[in-house]
Length: 167
Image (cartoon, rainbow, N blue to C red):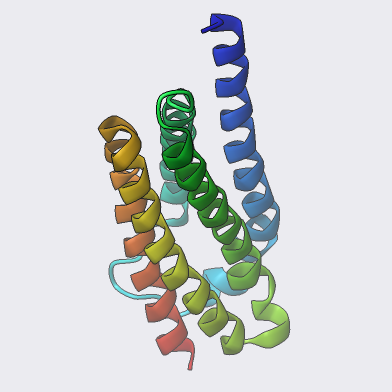
């Protein structure tokens, strides 16, 4: 397999992941110092400064995991297509969650937080399904998604906790 093509595809996977991150940042930046700064939060909520570095690492792991699955496309074409389809769906949910949680709160109030909770629970399930599909293609990519899944599960508790406290 052409190493240049592999490298370009890896760059594309990383670029897509960080585009989702950039979208999230746009929706978050104005709100972190706005309503979110003053919102009641659960006791296990980390400082806002933790989120950026954690997500930077997680998006890199996600991109590498997807790339490793993509590399198996000739050996297991059907499994790779299914796995990458699930990956894209969970990535879309990931991209939607942030604007709903942060961006819609000023307009919709607590309803936005509960809407975001529905999205993140769906994301929890889709990340697990993606991990299972990745596992069927190659184990390492599934393992690389474990920190992401753990963080999304943790973020779910933060989302629901903040929604409860704001209700």
